[in-house]
Length: 235
Ligand code: SAH
Image (cartoon, rainbow, N blue to C red):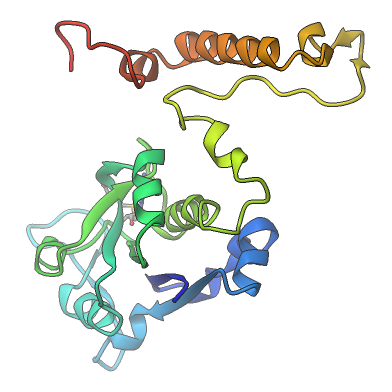
């Protein structure tokens, strides 16, 4: 059975969207992964098919109802991880993506409005995942980011096996700068070492560049990078 993503959303028409094109789209057509959507609204029972209601205790906006969402979840629930896209969640990292990509797939709940009733998060064991410290208007774009990151790691999806191993975060470092032809562009040359044909020198150059970039741009990653002994104090 191929890796399968089931997305619960009130906007099923947003899918596959960008996941239907390019690398993910070709892999989808080739059956390397599968995507289905559950229209949360189809699980509403009242005349107006409402999925949300006013927040208990007052305040702005609307909250997604636990009963409707639970029915939508129960319609697809199996052994797969149940995720809820949420700015309060665990940050989505390459390590987490790698873990999710090695399982059978994911069930992803996309929030809307002010979010989701807390009780359904607990009752259905939803794991909250965030794509960053900013607020989107809904979970769909966040879900697409998560699914895209997983799909490209599935067997047979990326052309060269190596491209998954060397890129940003794989070794806890940002990726080294890339160059391609023309050899000189607007007066700027490709670094000589990259056209030297000396593979060991190329590897050393790239490693040094990756380390420099990581140190400059992401001191947090640099401090936590693989193989580095912990320095006292922070953890
Ligand atoms: N009131 C909430 C934000 C709701 S945004 C709060 O302050 O935390 C509406 C929905 O968009 C959320 O339920 C979630 O599903 C999605 N969303 C917004 N930002 C996100 C992020 N950074 N990561 C993942 N999902 C996000």
